[in-house]
Structures are given as structure tokens and as C-alpha cells.
Length: 101
Image 1 (cartoon, rainbow, N blue to C red):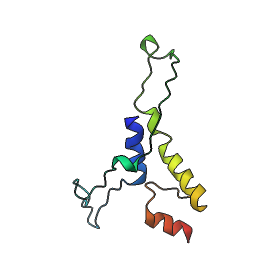
Image 2: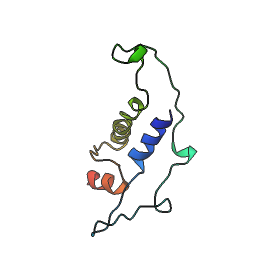
Image 3: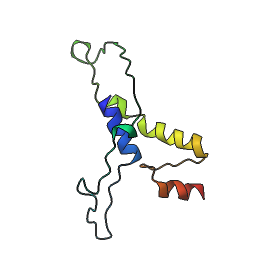
């Protein structure tokens, strides 16, 4: 669940910004947007236990699978809300505005 919330943050508000000389401008937490608890939805986890033939003792990795669909989910929600596809993450207000033109 934590990784899903981390990825929802990354897909929606995380942005690394460089100046024209390639200097990182968002290198500290003063310039870096971090989500608050009210910025992320409540998520209910459902565990489905199906052993893997590839892992030891039927084990699978569990850290990365929740992060895969988050960006597409947010992009689809934006599309449903405004009728415009934004195909680059993060979906910023500037990118959304340009896509709506």
C-alpha cells in the first residue's frame, strides 16, 4: 500500500526541474512537493495468495506490482474529467493546459 501511495505522488506532483545549464533546481525538500495524507486516496488492499512456480517456496516479489498502474490510472481519470489525453508524466497544470488547446 505504501508503494502505491508513493507512486501516486510521483505520477501526480513529483517533478524534477533543471535550469538551462543543467543544474538541478529541485534538489531539496524546500523545493520538492511532498503529499500530505489528504492528498492520497484511501486504499483497501486485497491479498490474493497464488504461489509462483518461479520463486523459492512459491514466493513472489510484492514491492513493485502496485506501482505499475498508478500513472495510467491518473491519466485515465484526467481524460475522463476533461476529455483530453496527456501522455507525459507527471501531469502538470501546464501540460494539461497545452493539451486542452
